[in-house]
Length: 152
Image 1 (cartoon, rainbow, N blue to C red):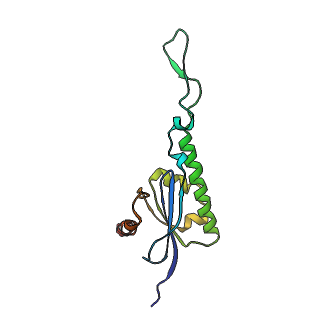
Image 2 (image 1 turned 180 degrees about the vertical axis):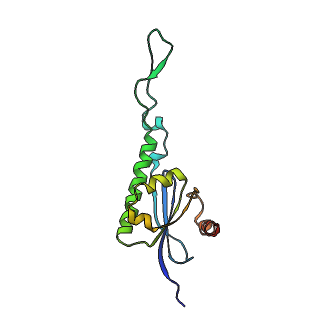
Image 3 (image 1 turned 45 degrees about the vertical axis):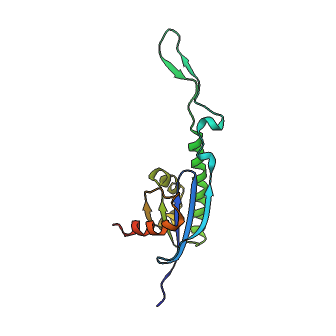
């Protein structure tokens, strides 16, 4: 008896790393499809040559204020990186390269990724797990994913 062939993508992500694995059969072996890293999203603000804005004091008053708004460049870099990843997944969904998509990321990261998904891509999302497993060894990922899939 033949098992139904699935082109299932499993996306593991944090704010600066993405790994996508594929499974071609139900409960089949996971194969790494894509691994991306964006180190700028991990840097500190001061490492990018920008620090918090200067502060000033109103004459005759004890109150202080910032000269300009504080921009979070690592956060902006992370958003741009995850937006590009979402575009790649949208492209794959449009070209029928995947049937199912499983997302494994912390809620904030998952929200950034999903915010750029097309309607067609969102229909392919079959499961979401709020875990950061990006640094888990590949040998343990399948076992961990199986345990998560068993939970109600």
